Image (cartoon, rainbow, N blue to C red; front, top):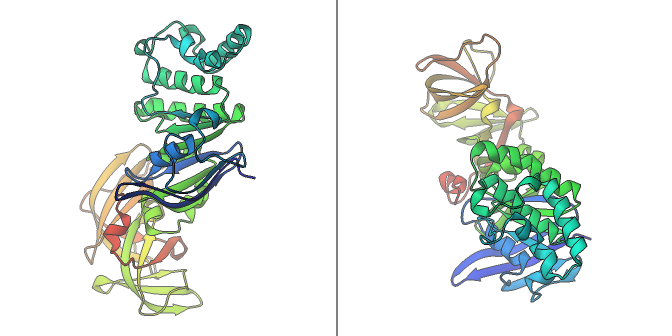
Length: 368
């Protein structure tokens, strides 16, 4: 039985439908990331589970018990706000021990639990400090320690690293996941950062415009996206519009504008059907000589950007379509320069084919 389950949950704010018929389950001990753009309904989802707001339709279950109408303090869950919501007039020790204290635990137990958790998050030496004396990363750890000390089995994390600098975010991601796993907790972590979700999650739920687009493991979400939006939002891709011109046992041929043709392994589309072919940036190679066969297109480097151990290239094809390529730098290989003529290549099996969306390609990949 799932620890948390939402069944046909809908939430409206006036005429705005924040969540529309959500069905989602979270297993005991799972680390689930809810990923989506701003305004997708992520925070509303957390607040419903926490009991801070109630659904207009549907049921929410925690531990097999329906919790609609049950107050937050009786749901065995702690909501960690984006700004951490620490008590500014209390020091670190008082903040972390607040939950056990109001539950009237015996003093020795409060002392032992608070000491153990502060050491676990490596803040024992700062127990007398006040929130304004701590860095953003330390405040985040105090908020996390306070939630664990309260005895909650479920952590509801709303953009927990949003206020931190990039380097600290990367360091704390793995620490937070390890802490959750070591303590046997269940976490629902809301974020708009796809790299963050891919790094820490057991599963990812992609939320868009109040609906769940896809749920799966990080690898499944990245390698087998079910929609154009998911492929664009998680990892990014090139999208080529075309018409299916031929289908056979080897795959399909797609005619692009300007008379260019490419081949894909997909055989599921009909001749004459309008489609969108998606190819990840890292699956596009650039060379100097034309190979025999399909998917070797002439292009010109319009821009080249150094990104750590790789180069990002913007390439304009003969038909004026623009593709992006990510090439790892290896050994003494020299980066390509702007203005160079190259052959753009990609394997048919690395192409994903989607039916052309009714509301248009650009609207489909928008992150709102």
